[in-house]
Amino acid sequence: MRLTNATVERLPDDIERPGYDRSAVQPGVVHLGIGAFHRAHQAVVFDDLLARGDRRWGIRAASLRSPATRDAMAPQDGLYGLVVRNGPEERVRVIGSVRDVLVAPENPAALVETLAAPETHIVTLTVTEKGYKLDPATGALIEADAEVASDLAGPDTPKTAPGFLVAALARRRERGLAPFTAISCDNLPENGRRLEAAVLAMAGRRDPALRDWIAEKGAFPQTMVDRIVPATDEEDIKRLAARTGLLDRAMVKTEPFTQWVIEDRFAGERPNFDAVGVQMTADVAPWETAKLRLLNGAHSGIAYLGALAGVEFVDRFVATRAGSAFVETLWDEAEAALVPPAELDIAAYRRALMARFANRALGHRTRQIAMDGSQKLPQRLVASLMARQEMGLASPMTSLAIAAWMRWQAGRGDDGTRHAVDDPLADRTAAAWAAAADPDDAARRLLALDAIFPPVLAQSPAAGEIARWLGDLVRSGAAATLTAAVRDQR
Image 1 (cartoon, rainbow, N blue to C red):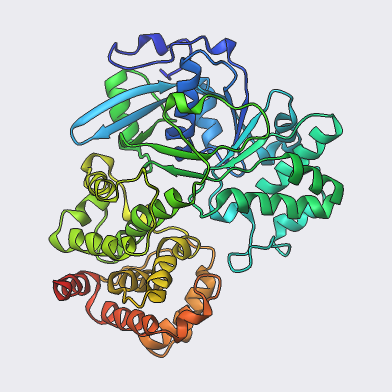
Image 2 (image 1 turned 180 degrees about the vertical axis):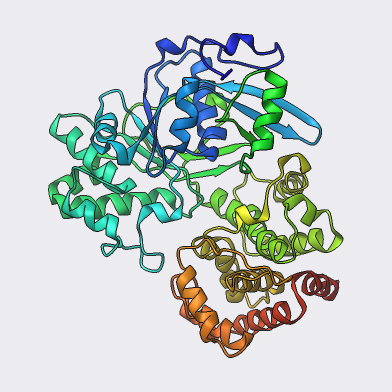
């Protein structure tokens, strides 16, 4: 029996469920790119708002690709379980904020109309770095992209996230409605500015007056989001069903920690985010930089070194002396180039991060984090490396993490097992490895990818350090290289 509106009351008493009338909820939010992270993060915040009595903030969600999430949630009336694990402790809460899920390719007009509806005040997005359709090196709209070209040629039947926003905003302008506030929730520096750039570039090709209207009246606040959300597997679903007596194919698992920082810049109505723990601020950048370089930078280093060495989970990596020492030294390097917000205690933040990484109950796989590395390295690791270089500081652990990404791009682990490289630049990195005469040559070719690395890096001392680490990784493997690296830092 599935979890539904009709069966939710059968749940055990220790499982929290929506304490509000779902039929009275208004859909004030549209979310693009519904996946596990949204269901464990933003949807929970809106559920908290609904529970406080503000019924304006129900969610109509949309998948821009696959019907899988819709197919899991529709038979459950949009309900799903949020499983919060902390060591041996586990809490389950049913989230009711998602009213329904649209699948954009099946009916793009329906999604445009939903975005253009008068009751839509906020649009949130988790579409990954690739979804903004911006050139990583220049920040310009990638007009040669097939989907972007399609949106420019047929703007009323969009395929991309920016295309849907532009089509809906054009319709709102025609109807005399104000723009909605578009909130990026992806792990990108200046995510709001990037989203705005993509939307304005596409709108300008459609109608310069539309572009100017959006620029003047719209809002694309910067945000920072943080919660570890590992992928759900069949064992998780079976375990929850055994506890609840109901099958929930849309469940998500996560950690207790959650954070959302939003620039207080809205085009119209906004909920009382402060009342449910969201931090509103005039400047997100210091929060974002600290999180990207400490949490995400360490995650990337763990992902590539761990996955190369056959370490499947993050907690297993930091449970080793070499793994935890690597993370702490990487943080020392990153912290030296940070200017954190006054409200952030870096020492306490680092302690909390290590405890989160060590949470064995999460089962956070290194290979999950390893995806799309070319889109993540610039802000997570390369920015820290360049900042330290300007300060005249060497960055051995940051360089090792970058070299581990390079080694991962070769498509083979330390034991010789081949793996798929899930990355937008996988063809280019594979070509670099195929043409390389040795690890030094591979490092030189990969550092020439200006979508990831600034050209000045290739001429710097750090380039030699990265090449040296890459050679060690090829010859000795990740485990031995890591052990030697942290020993040399003592």
